[in-house]
Image (cartoon, rainbow, N blue to C red; front, side):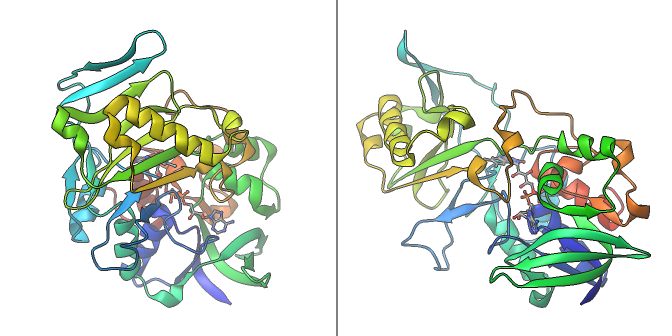
Length: 363
Ligand SMILES: Cc1cc2nc3c(=O)[nH]c(=O)nc-3n(C[C@H](O)[C@H](O)[C@H](O)COP(=O)(O)OP(=O)(O)OC[C@H]3O[C@@H](n4cnc5c(N)ncnc54)[C@H](O)[C@@H]3O)c2cc1C
């Protein structure tokens, strides 16, 4: 099999690159290792609504974009997807072992952030609708890439253990550089300093875990609470309102327990501790969620590697080192969000990187 551009990875960067190439009427193929598109974008529907037309789902990966993320705003508009502002009205909660639970107000301190109505995965679904299905191959994982004269041979493994080689003029590596270095062999090998530099790029949020509790109504708002909280007790360290505007209510939290420690804890115990924490912070109604979702990204081999166990305390300076910008005569191109020249790590960065890789004039 032959193609002009092979895209490895069907997260936002890979799918947006496919969308742009499709509009340019270029020849391409996208392979995705998972049996779903979206990568770190993952929205879980309630079992009762899954498959129905009123798609309401809760984000276990990214939730927000911000006013300066203009590519995101434009793309959502272009695809006809509604947004809404993160709910922040009312007081926040804080808890620590000494002082217990307290309320505080922080007017104007939280930057405004926006969410996608129905869940962030709607962006993925809508992008995919614009790409011919025969160009998207799920459950196909790249295992190795060989430079052979003027083209690349990519060894691809299918779900049933099938193996296939795809010949491409160029490859877009739309997966985190660190993950690529750990899981895809390159022949000839990259120079050691380039390999090491790519391996050193942390995969944004790969070491994090999210818990979402779903309720019939946003009862905390009746008490003048925004649903926002900080905790020094845990298991969640930062909590937000995750309700959909016209759907069920929800609270979500980022777990504060470091990834290494989480591996020793039974997920059922984490769920129970999160519900108990939401009850402490928001009252007795929080003890009765209609559903609870937990997603630990560190245990997902198509996002995280063992290198991502080390906690990240600040947002890294992303972007490719100069030596990794023109590999194999420009045939091997890194284009996940971590490779972006601006907004690296964010959804916006995934769009920046895909635009650069497909030659879309930057806007
Ligand atoms: C918990 C969490 C919260 C976040 N919150 C926010 C937020 O609020 N706002 C924000 O802007 N960003 C947030 N982010 C970051 C955001 O998710 C990423 O910026 C974005 O999704 C990255 O998209 P990507 O396509 O570059 O990479 P990915 O989504 O990681 O896509 C890579 C794809 O490659 C596939 N793949 C991997 N290996 C192979 C292989 N060998 N062969 C084929 N396919 C392969 C993967 O399955 C995946 O689909 C968050 C991330 C997480 C995990």
